[in-house]
Length: 140
Length: 140
DNA sequence: TTACTCTTTTGTAATGATTACAAATTTATA
DNA sequence: TATAAATTTGTAATCATTACAAAAGAGTAA
Image (cartoon, rainbow over all chains, first blue to last red):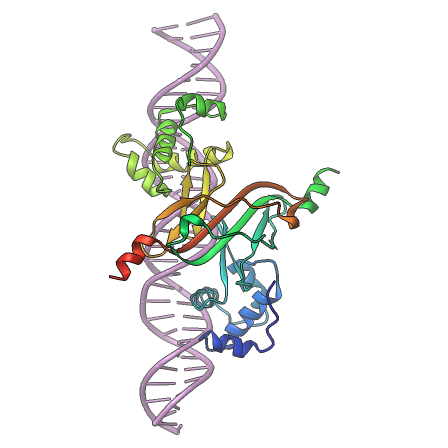
C-alpha cells in the first residue's frame, strides 16, 4: 500500500526531482490509481488535463522517476510495461482473463541463502492466473 | 535445476509438440545453457548449425514451447525477453553490472492469503542487484 | 512411385513501443 | 531585462516482434 503523500512537491524535491507541472501530474496520477497503468494509459488519462503533453515527456518522466527510486517498473508481459508509485515490496497478480493487475502482500521470507554475498537493489514477485472475479464469471 | 532429459523427442511429443530438427535443436540449446538466452542469442548460437534457420522460426518455436508449458518466459528488463527450459519454481537474479542472469532456489513460503480464491498458473520471482563476482571487481 | 493434404519453415513486410534528437518553451539567475 | 540552463515537445529513427504468404517438408492413400 502506498503511504499517503501530503506534500507532493516536497516528495519529488526530496527525491532530487524538480516538480514541474508535468511531473507533478504524472506522479499524482500514478499514486492515485492502483491499476498499474502503461505509458499509453497515463498519457491518455492526462492529455485532456495537459493538452500539450507529449508522450516523450511521459517516457522521460517515468525514466527519471525510476532512476530516483520513486516508482517501480513492472514487467509481467513482454509487450506491456506498467508502472507503480508504490515502491514497497509487494506482489503483483495479473489476471489472464480480464488483464487486470492487482497488488498482494508478500508473506515474510527469510534471507535467500544463495544471495548472501550479493547486493540487492530490487525484488519483484508476480503471479499469473485467474482472479476470483473472473472465475465466478467463467463458472456461470 | 532442470532435470536431465534422456529422450528429448519423447519429451517434446509428450508435451504435444512434433519434434522437428529446429524444435529439437532449439530446446536442446535452451536446456544446455543456464544463461537464459534471448531470441538473438538462441538464433546466433544455432544459425551455424542450421544455416537456413529463420529468426521467425525461433519466435514461433518459443511461443509454441511456452503454450505447451515446457519453457518459461523471463521478463526482467522491458527491452530483453529471455527464456528458460527449467519450468520449476525458482528465482532469477540479474546483475546490473555484468548483465548476467542466474538462478537461485526460493525458500519455502506458505499460501498467499490474498490469493486463496484465485487460480494460479505461473509464479515468478526475480531480484536485481550486483553479483558477488562484480562486487569483487568493483572493490579492487 | 505419385498425387494430395497438412504442417512447418522461411523471408519479407508491417507493426508498435521506445528512443534519439533538435527546436521550442519554460524556469532560474544575474 | 538579458542570459543560461533545464524541461518539454514533435518528428524521425530504431529495434524487437508479429503478420503473412510462399516454399519446403512430412504423412497418407492409391
